[in-house]
Image 1 (cartoon, rainbow, N blue to C red):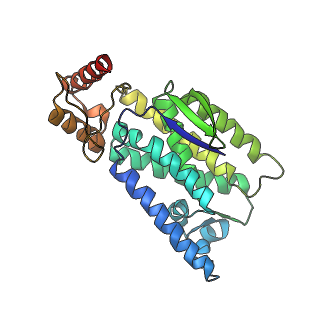
Image 2 (tube, one colour):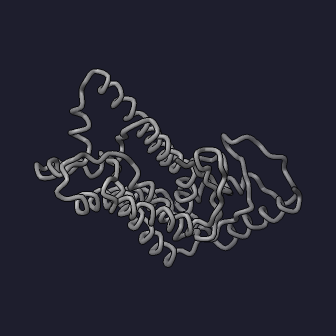
Image 3 (tube, helix red, strand yellow):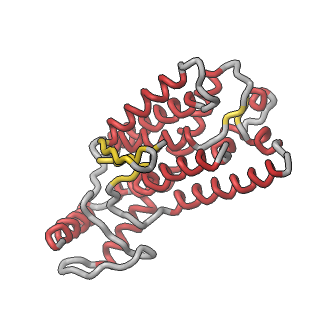
Length: 270
C-alpha cells in the first residue's frame, strides 16, 4: 500500500479536468455504494468491462468501467495518483492532450485486460489503467523528477519517475503471471502504463517540456505570497492559466523566460 507525492512546481492549483475526473469518480462510487446497500449490482454489470458485455455490443464499457471502483481503498489510491501527477500533465500537455492520454490509457488498459485474461468471464472496474497511463507518461516526459512514495502511508521512499514506473511495471507483470492474482486487474495496469509511456514519448519528441521545478506559486484559490522584486503576479497568473488551458509547449520564449526568472528570483530570496 503506497501513497505518492512529488515537488510540484504549481502546488495548490488543481486543474479543471483533473478536478472533473476526480469528482466524477467519487460521485459514481457513492452511487455504487448506495446501489450495493440495496442489493443491486446491475450497475456494475452494465458499466463494468466484461467479455460478455463487449460481445453483446456494450462498447461503452471501455469508457464507463474507469469510473467504477471496487472499494474505498481502490478509489482512494487511484484518486491520490490522479491528484498528484494529473495537474502537471494537464498543464504540460494541455487539456485536450491530457484527456486523450487519460482515456487512451484507460481504453487500452481495458483492451489489454480482455486479451491477456481471455476467456476470463469476470468484470473489470477502476481507473487504475488510466492512472498507470498518467504515471507512464509522466516518466516519459519528466524521467528525472523525484517522486516520494509513502509505503504503508508511513515509510517515505524517494526515487526518480522513470525508476518508479519501471518498478511498478515489473510488479504488475509479476503479479499478473502469478497463479493467484487476487482478482486485481494487473493486466489493465500494465497495458495502461505502457500506453501512457508511449504516448508521453511521442509528445516529448514533438514538444520538449522544460518545467521550472523550483518555482512555487500560489495564485488564485491557493493562498497568497509576498510580492518580490521583478515578479509581475498578473503576468505570471496569465501564463499559468495559458499552461493550464493549452499546455506548456505553447509558451513563447519570452513567457518561458518570465517563469524562469521568477523561479530564480524566488530561489535567491528564500
